[in-house]
Image (cartoon, rainbow, N blue to C red):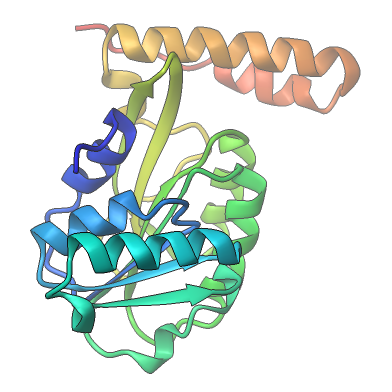
Length: 218
């Protein structure tokens, strides 16, 4: 199963061994299926849309007939993941949804954590407000980067509720060290907030903050 560049990047950034990987808002389940193929973790496929989970179930039965004991399927709200019911190291992936929704889900999940959990996020927009929320949660940064697919640039945030890691910043640091990709992402971000600020004066502060970003163009 060949993944697109965004999902492949999410797969490749994970270098740790996990006992459980949660593919949330899983859509067609491609990312979780890749982990099912490449790792020994138990993969949990989660989506609120019953038809999507039904399709994922059929695909897994077809392509992974011997792996039925290594995955589970859930039609439910990601905010209600039963993380506490499982032992061992866990990774929760939330990708392909808006930053506001991601912030809501992360707030709910983090307030119920009883053990260390890692998170891999790739929202489609509202990165600044999401990062502000993440800063308020008991999380550290493991890795951050940009990935481009179909002319859209995404932020990838790999986080942990453990004690080891860097502080989360509202604008990011490493994402501005990816050469021309960082330059184009900054240009697009400034253009976006310049437009938003015309109707929402409060966005002017975000625009001004991004104006202070220093790029590292190698």
